Length: 298
Ligand code: HMG
Ligand code: MG
Image (cartoon, rainbow, N blue to C red; front, side, top):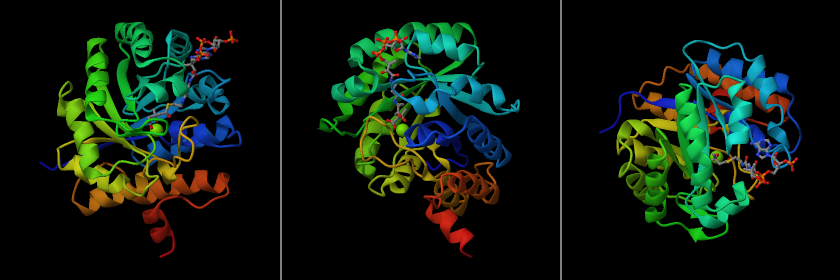
């Protein structure tokens, strides 16, 4: 069942940089996006149109979107929590928007200040308006295996949110292990739950690597045939409302694993390592990627 090709969405500019203490200048974010597309990434999550009071790091959303030299074969996505965010995002011409809900009530409240049911009510007009404009709609299901406030999350919770997202026209869902607590069988169960409402072409894995499980979890989902993953250049990332959670699995590490398995990504690993090095140098730290470290130390 292993796929022969995998599609990677690099979420570093968004998931990665939303969680940095300091403000990363728009110019650097644009530089990262350019390096990622040079490395062969075909999908990049650029920014989010959320409240700047909640996440000041993404307040430069429109400036970043306007500064990117777009390529016709690259899909640029942005996070949108509500109609206000959607209206602001439209002016930036994203190819895809991402509505983000959660499988746990407590996380939904902390992250987007509403219940799961209310979030779906907010997302419904957003999805409708986006589809009417020809903008693709993806959904993220946070805390799909564990919640920083509620602990373990049952697959039934994921199934419920997947069903609700499907009902409002969300075309693709990502199963997100926000705090990286999942292990392969748990993540497979969460993915199975999403697959009750979405087919294999419309699900993805979004694994934070807090407990070092993300590559294993990726392999577990590859074995189910899942071929879309969100990963983050240099392992950047985290969520401001999930304290202590580290970044997404590093794109470099996933690409190294996939290429080693003979699975195509279309990504040039050396150029990708340069992209991760560029942002890590700016942040004055080493890339949080084992493959990058190993290759740079050779
Ligand atoms: P709220 O306070 O309940 O919203 O926040 P509100 O509708 O009551 O509005 C309050 C104020 O915010 C108003 O301004 C609105 O205009 C403004 P004021 O009148 O006080 O001056 N506002 C906005 N401004 C800009 N853009 C908007 C927007 N909406 C309202 N879109 C809200 C609700 C959802 C806005 C808030 O909770 C929020 O912005 N949350 C974002 C949280 C976030 O970005 N989290 C990180 C991304 S999710 C993630 O990382 C997980 C993921 O990676 C998957 C995984 O790993 O799990 C995707
Ligand atoms: Mg995330």
